[in-house]
Length: 173
Image 1 (tube, one colour):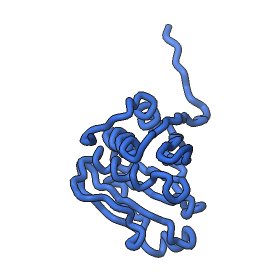
Image 2 (cartoon, rainbow, N blue to C red):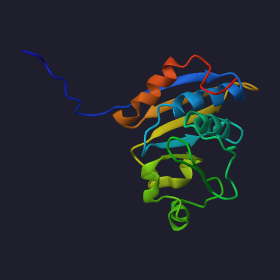
Image 3 (cartoon, one colour):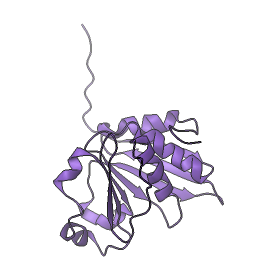
Image 4 (tube, rainbow, N blue to C red):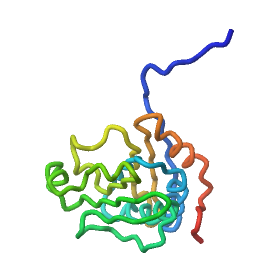
């Protein structure tokens, strides 16, 4: 007789990695972009200059995006085509979740691609419960501690990829 294990309550899974440079932060992003699936929601947290946009640039590379990715601060959302569409949101200038909803930043199209939200805390209660959460902490002039937390088993593959990351990534020197 075989035993079967049932998960009754998901407590999450997390990992913390260190990136010693902007290039390393991009490389981690590329590694994680390579494991992305349609409908994924990635919430980025961290102070100004912590590495969120560098990570987004790398994530786009991992998705096969060939366009230059910059912070969409003045447009709020930029869309890029890769093996999956990338919806890159920068919520820094938003007053709160109602502004995001009223501005059409959250819609059904995002189910076909990956939504990467910088300053995700601005969404408040509108922030997806089902998400990968990534927190960037400045630990030195160029060094960052990057914590990944999977809110559901769906996002565990990202945490595993980060834990196995060797400091380099696809398409980056």
